[in-house]
Length: 402
Image 1 (spheres, rainbow, N blue to C red):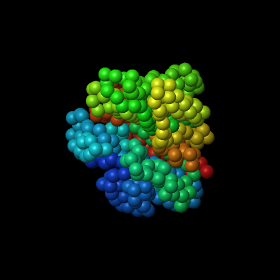
Image 2 (image 1 turned 120 degrees about the vertical axis):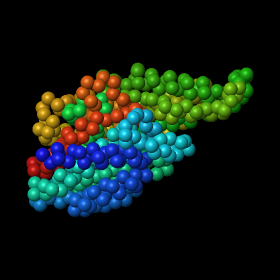
Image 3 (image 1 turned 180 degrees about the vertical axis):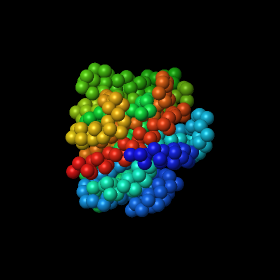
Image 4 (image 1 turned 60 degrees about the horizontal axis):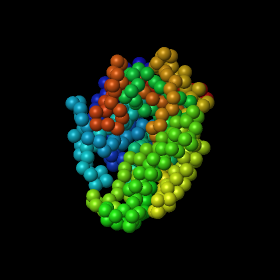
């Protein structure tokens, strides 16, 4: 639509404002206010406070039909920004007891701005809408704080896919390693199921000079970490799908000459196949318990599922692919392999058919883009225009095809 070109500068302005004022998961109050104010100004019916800080807008077309949802995540990360952008975040906070900066280090600011732009365009073309469009601005995609509910799961629990009932849902994620002007997609499993795990190891405390008088949980922890990697390298059929076990945190001990009583491992499992996921979780539990017992201690393993497999419905993907090719050009829509990143958009896809794709945000010719979730992360704002076009045309084409 020509309207996308006309609104591009406004979308970039929204993005920069949101980037400069980031908010952590379940704390996105100012961001939600900006979204709600904009949607209300368009005459869209707005509900706030969904899943704590989420915003949902409902736009009814002039003609009856199905219901399609468009989703954007709105939360930032506990990362201190390190670049020279004029709209760089200077926000600081305390996160889990540590002082940190707050940054949109994953591009959610662009997702919000793109969907705000799509909402404005679509609200001006109700005569072309055969049905209803729900605009879902979701908090806490990065995960709610410990002890809190949040994200897609809580939105679903509170009925975001009901009244009116959603028939399909679309979402996008900007990517710093995909060139501007490009859309990347994969039918079926496209992002991983994610588990957070905690291994608690019990030993027997003793003096560091006499390890034979105790049971060393740090030594056991090392054996368990090594054993976990053998599950990936020797037991997982990696020619079928990728899988990853990462230990990201090790805690144990207080002093150089004391063998402690306990140690803790915290990490993540990423899987793209349900059977492999089941096997890996089973074997991690068996291995941790078995190795700890072998060396005289004990261990327990607790898993917390944070995302399911982001599964693009095969029929919906095939149906909407021509729309993406139309807005981007055939040569700029790329079929890609699955990634081991995780996305709680997957919970929406467990309820209704969904299609999730990646939007290019890398300056063409850049050979060393900064990864997501890092202090130097950057997005080329020239990529937002294609995002606006895609999120505007997808719902219209879907509703018109019924």
